[in-house]
Length: 331
Image 1 (cartoon, rainbow, N blue to C red):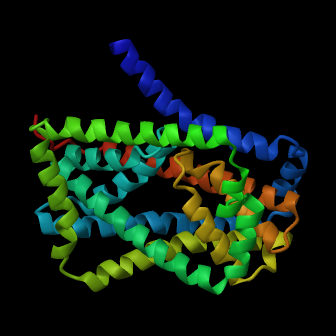
Image 2 (cartoon, rainbow, N blue to C red):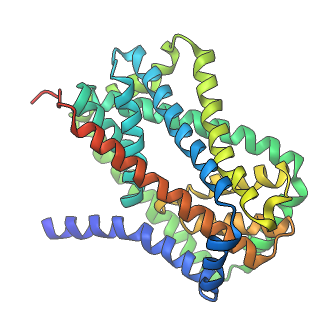
């Protein structure tokens, strides 16, 4: 039994890396990496690239500040610095185990500020819901203004529903149906199991309290400002990199926001920091805006690699800072 659990955990951890690695291999299997190296060393403007990293930091700073604001209505008042460090570490954690960061940052506050883990987790759920609604709103606006580009994107990627359905064979429909049935059955079994686990009632109650914490936020305008600041920072973190390369420097705001939106949606696929799906999405959009395929691939690889390198740096910094703190969690 223990062996099976260990194997399942190993598969769950390895699968995102295999998926992301497979997509990257497929995209870059014929790439001239010597040319990419030359681009990084001699053609890229490092001044703009380093400047873009500033906004990678501010995005996480604002996220930490906003998180503390959502914790206050449920009676939790952790140190602001601890909230920020927890966010830094959470992103680094997700590089190792995708989607683990949400749990990691709650555990950090539980350890250093005696914050309720489940209540904190509820506020994280709230944050994710707010961010999802925000990105959906921006997506709708951009989608309507750039409908022709999105239609072309769907055609190029084969995501046109009619094309997908026409491409299915009888076997394809059967396999898809079986997969859907298995998925639904699996979800039903999980929910049924949870129903009879009375110990989880208190956990769900705390999570619900955390989710509803937004209603008690004292300054909702300030919360909205932090949300805008987070996403403005993410966008600037990305857009400024256009200035680093000759082949993207002349692209305007529209190309930047469309590729940013599509890239943001692509990271729903659980790979480390969106590696693979993000590269494919951004590369495809840039090509639609006239960037040569080889240059678009180089842009995605270079930008993602450098900006991802910032994440563990911030995580290690926060671990060092927290190591000087004394745990306040109850035994």
